[in-house]
Image (cartoon, rainbow, N blue to C red; front, side, top):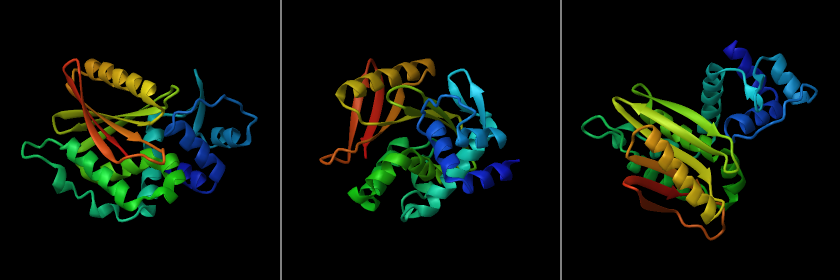
Length: 228
């Protein structure tokens, strides 16, 4: 069944793009069985009718499709393996150095992707980071992805590694107001999980953007963010 899902996504560009819009970008798609791509996805068992519109059929299918999309991104990226060697990011106590991972990802994006790749990054930026992270946590850790369906379309990533837990939020820069709202949302999410540290990856597509890092203290919680 899993092989069939991958084969059908590989052979149908419109079905692949629709699946990516739902799974990676958190778009709400109105359920319409008469739409050709939706109809094919229903036939193959990839989609189902959810409370808020079209959804991926199950969490297991989501993970299978994530892994497939990540593998496609990894094979098409430039020199990623030069930046994400696992041993560089593990502390002596077995904890992940998330700050170092994010800074290394920032360096990778700055050195390997120029403005001519902007459209590709806007469409696949989240997958790029997931592909960057996967070799680092493989064999020891797990990542749980949750798309927040909102105007920001952010992706929350919860990583469990050894006895440690981390929350990384990925979002597109849409101005200071949305950024402030995003900080508050991350604070609330950290509070729910009883964590004191959180992390933000912000994909900025302004022409005069800076590849930078910032540290924010919000009511005693530490948030580290990078702009790429």
